[in-house]
Image (spheres, rainbow over the protein chains, first blue to last red):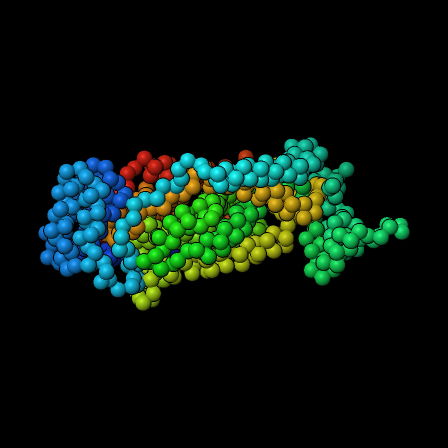
Length: 198
Length: 383
């Protein structure tokens, strides 16, 4: 780094920059903690069932089922069960315990039909979710149309690469260096200076 | 064809007299210009396209010096595919996820277009970062190009924002959790983060506002800044290559470095753009992005897109504030760079402090990213 004498004006400017950074970081450091959705875990029964469905949609293996079972337990224990068919939730819980994930999902989804049909149109950060659809995988085996897109893409990639090679600069940087002289700008002697000297 | 700057520097006319698109091209002898030539000349007379034929030093056509142009090509691909996707996408929470599934499964070519859009977003992010690294390692942010460097940093911030908003628009669990994080960070910012608060416009789904940001605000700002970036590149000229000599001012390429018209630079970028589109198409067919499960509030089970992983490792360590601190530190250091590093030298060997700091920062981001890749998703929202 180049060392320069510090003028009072520059010092003041730096002091301002530092103080702004300190204020910004300080406001962040001492800001009140933020919580998602304001109040931690929900008490709404239908939402707890949805959360169970969310875990199953993401992971239908043992871990996903375990997390879903926890949410189902919470849904059965909560006081707010408006729009939730508790007996269907219990059947869904039993199906999951028996290892039938698909049946369990179907029963849980059916159990909250009344609750989700009564939801107002979503505003703010509401999800608007009524039916929990599973992950849609990227692709399966390539079909005819995919092959057409693939071949066209390969042709474009090859054509573009060929054009890029054709339009490449006439000289490499190394060749330019040899042509202009081997000293770089940081050697303290510019090309113009060399020209003047010669 | 190359020309020396000395022959054309300061000239307002094209470098190649009589070259393609030149309005001043006289018909040689008694030969009448072809219809194509006449049409091009007529077009140029009215649009002044030949003004783009100003000379640029030959090293500007290297791949490393073309990364900014390739980033712009990615933006072009994103805009075209984005317009196509917007015809079928519904930005309403109740139907957004289903509309993405409809695009992928029912719209002719929809899976391919969405795949190209997704991969073009990755390409834009990567090429923008590579461009930034090239600018850093070759000292192109130094006087008199500091302001243009800051414009570039602002564009990188907008690209990050575009990636984030695009992630949310899928309206799957991953997108919803990304939104949840951003709302929380908005709260940490207090008044400065009000736009991300659902309370800012509580009768409108935040998804609709993010859709507006993703399709209008963010790309619009990127385009405005890209035009400014290009104009400033023209004003300050392409930065000298650190391995080559400079002119007497030390700020520009030497007068005896061969030049080519800027249109040749554009031509090579177009070629790179065609190749890029092909590569993106291959990726779109072989590795199309999936669509996650419908979003559910109150659970956190997904991982963010890879470009945010380094921040989320910080979140795993110190909570949601880690993302904010990480972002502030990253962009703060980038912004401070030209003000702190006043060393006029450009070659990496002559800038040990800047190189050391830059490589340390790069390594840190890479290590944090790798750590996230091997760490399972954790619950932070509502904890």
